[in-house]
Every structure is written in C-alpha cells, then in structure tokens.
Length: 403
Image (cartoon, rainbow, N blue to C red; front, side, top):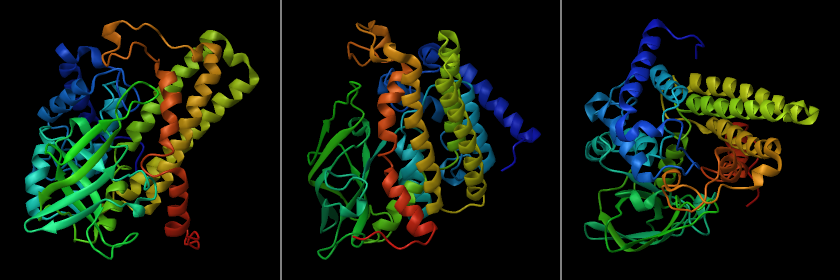
C-alpha cells in the first residue's frame, strides 16, 4: 500500500470532502463529530437516516460491483473514502451489518439470485440487517451454537436464542447460524440462513447496558420461518461462510478507524496539556507509549491492506489487526481515565434533552464512553483469546488447543 496518493486518488478524496460539506446540513448539521460505536449521543433512527443519505450519494456501494448497484471503485479508493470520511469528522457510522458483513458475504459465497435479491436494498439503505451468531452458551465459541432449523416443505423453521444482537430492533432481516442436521456437532452441520425479523416467531428483548443504551438485544426464535432457498453456501456448510463473514469486518475501513483513534489521542493530549497532567513523567510516558503503539497499528494495517488489495476473501491473518486494535483501545480508555483523574468518575446529570436523545437522564463524555465501551472491544467480533487461537493454529501452525 503506497503512502502517497496519486492525483486521481486525491481528486476522489476532494469529491468525498465536498459531498460531506454539502450534505451535513439541515437535519444532519449537528451530527459532525458525534455518534459511532459505543457513543450513544445520537438516536439510532438519526444514524439510519444518515446511512440512507449516504446511499443517495452512492457511498454505500463503493466496493460492490456495478451490476448489483455498486460503484466498483478500486480498493485504494475505498481506503481513501473511509480515511477522508473520518478526517472530515463526519458522524460515526451506525454498525451497518448488511453493508459491511452480509453484502460482501453474498458477493463471495451467495448465488446470483441471492445477490440480486438482497444487495440492492442494502445499498439503497432500505433494508437493515442484524447478525445471529452468539448465544448464551456460544459466545466466542461459535461452534457451540444450539439454535436449530428443520426443513418443513418449502421453508425452514428456526428455534433457539441469539444474544448480543446489535440493533436487532431496527433490522428487517438477520443472517442466522444454526444447526440443520440431526448429527450436527461443533463446526459440522451448521447452515447460514437469511431470516426475516418481522414475523410472529421472532421476539426481541433489548439489553440495557451500563451506559444506558440498548444497542444489544436478545432474540428468540420459536418456529420462525424463512424460505428453503435462503441459505448462503451449502446446507451444512455454514461454518466456512460464517468465518468468511467475520473476515470482512477487517477490511478497507481499518485505516479510517485508525484515523479516528488518532483524533481521540490528539484530544487526550490536548486535555493533558491543558490540565498540566502531561508534566507527570509517568503519565507522559504512558501517553507516548500509546502514541507509539498507534503508529505500530497504522503500519500493520497498511500491511494488511496491501494483502487485501490483491483481492479474495480475507484470511486468518486478519486476526492480527483485531487483536491489536481492540487491546490498544481498551488500554487507551484506561489511560484517558488516568488523565481525567477524579473528574472521570462523574457523569453529567441532569443532561439537557437535546444532548441526550435516548432519554437516559445523564450523559457520559466521549472519554468516559471509550473507557466503558472499550471493555467490549476485546470480546465482540471474536474475543482476544479466540484471536490468539486462530493466529496460533491457522497462521503459525501451532498444535491445536486441547478440547
């Protein structure tokens, strides 16, 4: 991956910046620098509306082929978009599961019929998706799922429970990993089904987090139905598809994510200077360690992006990036509270209604939210322990962990 942009790539970045300036107006004028994963300072409905605004500009389908409604841009242009988007302090994106996970999975593993049915509504922002992976007894150990589906004529009937289902209350569809064979166990006999959420057999129960938000949900399936042909990949071959989906979490947006981390660190450095905490030699050393580690992250991400730019489905080595950034951001949250000192223990209460759209009655500032939510980074999307197992067994070729 080259460090310098070509004239054409810089022109593309100018196009992105110009569009954002022209569209972060009206109802979206107050979104700049707000929102994002763990930052519940904007109502999800507003962020979903912003996704539709992006769709209107053709920005949701950068990496999708034109025959499916995408723009078919180069991988480098996709990286430029995500980086420029964050540099412009455009609103933090809601986890658009359909766009970032299900869509690329369909392009890689789905039939032409599935691609034509589901990708265009994703790119137009008219259908929103959630992910049915984790269960109460199958978190990072996805192979332990117990949700089952049985074929009844021309439909699947799904029964079981999923948990930590992000934004399920706003989704029209879910992709659900479940068991479809009587002899199914561990990685074998799993299937990857596409299931409509708005039906009598689906119950959604929001989980109230310590921050007061309800991003996560429990989802219960009681003979929930989906068409027999809404299977991605082979029946019983869902493990391969599910692992491919996880790989797409670590794609072109990673450099934009690192740019956001740099903005957070710059803000923390400004706070440390303003309060004089930077004069503490221990704190100063910790700040510089965080800076150095962030630079290491950047170079590693550039290396990963270079590998991805050759095309194909991401491999297990992508776990390096997930393990690194999750650990760094968790430590950064702890450092932020160290810089804040005692004031970091106090929230803003009561909060003016216009600053608290979710009606929590209180507000955490961005650094406090990073500290609280950063604990989740090393768990979701595959815990740190699972990432180490993947790297040891599938990248380094070490013996498998005893079962």
